[in-house]
Length: 241
Length: 241
DNA sequence: GCCGATTTGTCCGTATGTATC
DNA sequence: CGATACATACGGACAAATCGG
Image (tube, rainbow over all chains, first blue to last red; front, side, top):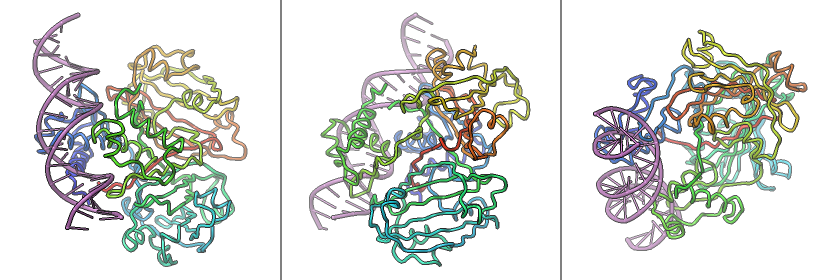
């Protein structure tokens, strides 16, 4: 629900870039011009533009202007840096998602689990294994750990649909921060059993810790991806801090 | 060289977080307090804090405060999202880097290379293959494409040391934006020949386009990493734009 | 090389809205 | 309800980089 002015300006500029209204390598209107175009203060313009910078759409050059560096060459098949649930990204890419729950249990974090997930020893957790299909192909196995005190009354039915919808719409938990680490690992027996890995014996693994709006980590998930369908995008900018 | 005030405040807050002066889950001083502590305006404080947010150190909560969510559990073995050269990151982690040039050529981009790299057809390029060692272990094979009109007079000697040092210190080219895509690919004969992959037949591949301060893409690189030493960190925040 | 106009970068102060307690 | 905290927005000032005359 964007109602903030800077978000509207961001959206408008972004669409103008994506549709080619501003061409690749072209300079955007100067900040002063944008102020007149959108009828707002300079700070608001600068905030919209700086968001475009972090998303890799434009590059600012002191004394020169703001250059469009968006190339529509490659489709963004996965998230561009934000947080997105499996179902959301599937729908955004016009694919049909399906989820099968392989395992559903309530556990208490011991030392080993604590070290792996970051939950304190003794935490009451839901632990599930889920298999995600896209257009009928088994692509991802997720190992989810949810903190029971936050994610209350989780059921098989919810887990088969979308846990994130349950979190946001029913429990009104908003996901804020997610720390992710990507690695490549040898496949396990479980991976081999459920994913069609072809002649690859490795897969892409994304481990993530997710925090709610109270700053409490309530989820640890290890996502194991079939390598040929895995792809992760990222934009980095040089900083001097 | 940070001399901007917000960068100093960022650095100070970050070090206080890393050393535990602010504890995990603790609230930082409120913006008003920070204004008095650092003797600056609210905007400057907010900019420092928001940089900490994007780096995953803290989380802001409207009406409540700013919570420290930094856990020193796992060392950042690779870059945290910024741009860093192989040599820089090696030195930062107290490891000894070495680079061997396998191939050095000047080429002109044909259709196939253009599609792969994003350079226009007909671009004059340097193409090199380089093998990177860390503490004596062959870990990465890089396939670099540099735009000759920007990266002038590249030599074997430079390529064996650090191209980025040459770019920054000699040519005074500053790297600004880097768009990266991570995938997992089957190994090639070259990979197998030079990297010790053990029983894995896949590797982590990072493809990146790099832009200079004029907004010109001057580098395309495909980095092929030995999977057991590959690790990529990332912090994502939910946005509603 | 200098100067002035333009453009982005940094910083300040203030006002108002919204969420929390 | 009031106090506190962060979020958004405005306006102004000066610095730094770029470009053209």
